[in-house]
Length: 379
Image (tube, rainbow, N blue to C red; front, side, top):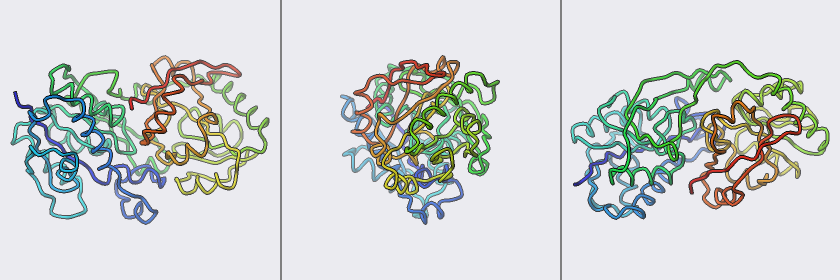
C-alpha cells in the first residue's frame, strides 16, 4: 500500500528566536535586520533524512509538496524523487496564505498525513484548513511550540513518520495552541486553545501541551529556590548570571530585587541587571567580557524542555561557551511530577550528544535540595 504524505515547510519559522524577538509573526523584516537567518529548511531536511535511513518502504511513499523552500528543494536534496508539486507560491517571501493554499491541495489529493515544519503559528494555519480531516505531524522549528502535534526533535519527527507509514501508531486528538506574539514580546503570557486536531498519539516522541497555564504557585518552595540562587550569587560574586524565562525564575529575580524579563534572557552581575531581554549577539558579547558565567533555567511545565523551546537566544554557540556544568536548573517538585525527563533540543547534534552522555542532570527543588532527573535528547 502506498502512503500519501503532504509536506510543507514554513521557511521563516523560528527566525525571530535567536535575535530575541520571541517569534517571527509580523516582525520578519526586523528579524532580518538584526541578522536572523532561516533554518527551517535544515530542520526539515534532518527529519526527512532520518525517515529515509530508518524506513525500508521509503520508495512506497508518494509525496505531495510545494515548490522551492516550501518543500521540493528539501525533498530533492534528500534524494526523494517520487513527489508531486501541487502548489507554487507566487512570491519568494512566503506567507501563511501559502501554507493554507498548499493544505487545500493536500485535501484534494486525499493525503494520509500532513508533515509540516514550523511552529505554533504554522500549526494553526494548517488546522484552519484541514481541521480533523487529515492527521498532522510537526517538525519543531518555531520559537513557540506548545501544540501537541510536534515531535520532541527533528529526529523524533522522522522516527514518527516512519512508524506512521508502517501503521504502528495510534491517531488521536491533539491540542493546537498559539501564543499572542505581540503580547509575548511585552512579557504577557496569553496563550489559547485554537482547536483539537488529529495527530499521532505517542508520549515518547510527541510533546504534550502545557497542562495548565494559570495555577496557584507554591510560593514557599519558590522562596527556597530564591534562597539557593541568592547564595550562589553571593558565593560567586565575580560571576555573571544569565536568567532564563518563566514564572519560577521571575519569582527568584523579584525576590533578589531585580526587574526580570518574564519571557526573555537577562544578565545579572552582583545582583544588578546589566542586560535585559538579550538576543544571541548580546549574550555572546557579554560572555566575551565575563569569563565566569552561570545559566539559570527552569523547565517548561509538562513538556520538560530547558533548551530549544522559547529561548533560541541560547544557541548552541552560547551553551558551548557557558559549559554544561555551569547550567543550574530550578523547579518546584509539583512541576517535576508532570515532567518524565528534562528535554534538550539545541539544534546541534554534537552538543545534544554531550547532554545525552550525561544521562542525568541535577534539578534544584528547594534550598540546598536537588533531585536527579534523566535527560532526553532523542538525537
